[in-house]
Image (cartoon, one colour):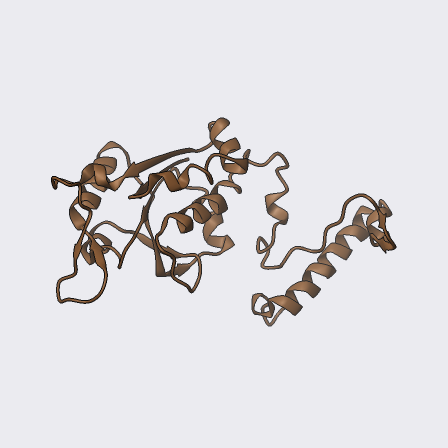
Length: 227
């Protein structure tokens, strides 16, 4: 997979993409991430990327020209499955969306800033808008990093244990059951006996029961009427 990220703050991705799962995926050659500084495509003397909004109002607006030039250059080099704009009024990111996007070959992710981007960018170039929650961030960079992590970790070969991602919360519309590790007894707090029994069938039944119980308690909205 190739992911091209358009931003005016490329250095914000140094840390989230330089460690852990994403770094491992990059080192394995499973995913390639390219960060593009939108300012490099500005045709103004001072490399401006924003201007005042027509019609007035507080806040600056990101200009169409540098964004369009960057997207057009990338599209001239390859075909993209989606051009995503990280926006608080986009569709809410969930595991199903992450799973779906993980099967794509090429993605562009645009990070907005200030009061937003010129609406003509959304009309002419953006194919999908995604939000990571009902709140506003200072820019789209953190949201883009979250989206990338959610996508990359479910690509086959990224995680050491191929079944690990399949047992994550939300993969089957359930929260994950409780998990434990050594020691089996810590100051009287004991691991449930069933998990030490070696009976795989009963262990899986326990895990499913606990997942259902936790989901019903914490996220009943995930359970359909048939569950």
